Length: 68
Length: 359
Length: 169
Image 1: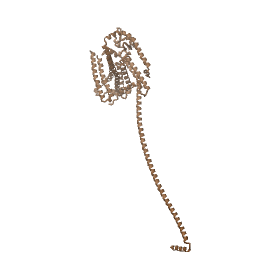
Image 2 (image 1 turned 90 degrees about the vertical axis):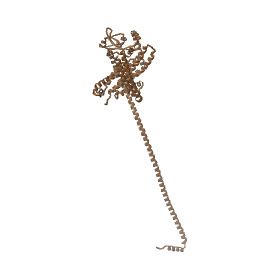
Image 3 (image 1 turned 45 degrees about the vertical axis):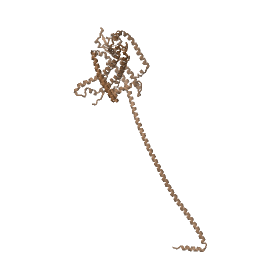
Image 4 (image 1 turned 135 degrees about the vertical axis):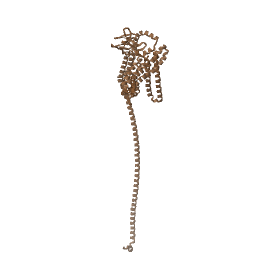
């Protein structure tokens, strides 16, 4: 049973990351649409931000898996 | 140091392929021996296929290199014990079926981990704590293969650069140069600033080492298939190196920012621990990110393949293979992206450490 | 949780050490034999390209400058030529005028000279005519006189006439 609760925690962490990365990607798209000439800079910043969000989510997943 | 002929020599390439094949056949004979022991186990396995254990087995490090079917290379075992160094072939364990009587203790493979067994055949936990496993495992070999590939590629490219000074890149050189320029112009220079050239070697090495290990991990057959970058210990080593590089290159502004931040004095008890945790947590995030991304990719691919065995139907195979193909293509992107992000964040951390502040 | 970290060092220290060794060896070898020459070659090439571009730019500027200069020279030369032509024309006109004037003066002088000569000649001719007339009249008079004065009486009458005319003042 603990295993399934750990999986739940992992799932919750992934929801947060999904929302976060979705926001990052969406806003980056808007930014690129508005200023196509800045797209490379926006992409780099987007990837960094997405990686940071993802990192937090992965902490959650790892802690969830360790806690089982 | 001219290695370009290695890539050019067709004769050498042929002999390498031949030797790989021959070694596979040589392994067959070993496999036949171990088959007898595995038969009963195999029967039991076929009755209940457990995808979790199968997947975890595949992504874990091992004392054998499983090539396919029942064929696997036994890898050398090196043990550092309190009495001295033990060195023997992993074949002696027969996949954990038998204990091996070494020079100092009797060893047994339990869940691919080496444990000391006492006279009664039980695992001796106390003595097990005295031995350290320095075996050349699957991941170590995979790491060496990756390193060797990097050396061959880049030393040959470097010799081409020496030969063709000032000329436009040609051949393999023109494949490598954009990537090096990408690391320099997109990763190092914008994040570190004008001091970037000092950190180029470590950034390039990290980038290409992660990338080639990611790519080799995607190859399902022999030279690849090991999950090196999806091994948390490997990413731990890389993250430790990043931690050291960042903190040893940090200037006084960086340390002032940590120990004497521009906040009211009563905030210091909160700020300083937070900043100190930040020093550790950033490389920690690097470690977890790379490990989790690559492992997740491997787990998804293996899960999709496992579907065939879970449903025990060949009809599911085309669907599974199609999804695996899709995932592999995605993983090609992830392989590059993770190497890029790791290097990018490393450069970012170095950049914050060497930045000159003008408050 | 506890089980996960049990025997952690025993099982995994070896791998960590191997990974560290592999990475450090790779870093040293690649750093020395690959990254250093490659980065040096790339920066060198970039510098030479930049140099070449700068030189091309400079050459272009030089070219433009030269063209400009040429044009300037051409313009100047044209202006000079025009000036020279103008001067030449002026000189020509002047010469022609001078020549005309000189010719006119000379003509006038010659005409004058000729008229003086003509006058002189006329005078000489007149004088000689006068002389001939005089000598002729003298001859005639002589002959007449000789004829009239062939006898003594006539001579005496004449002398008396003459003497009448001549009055001693």
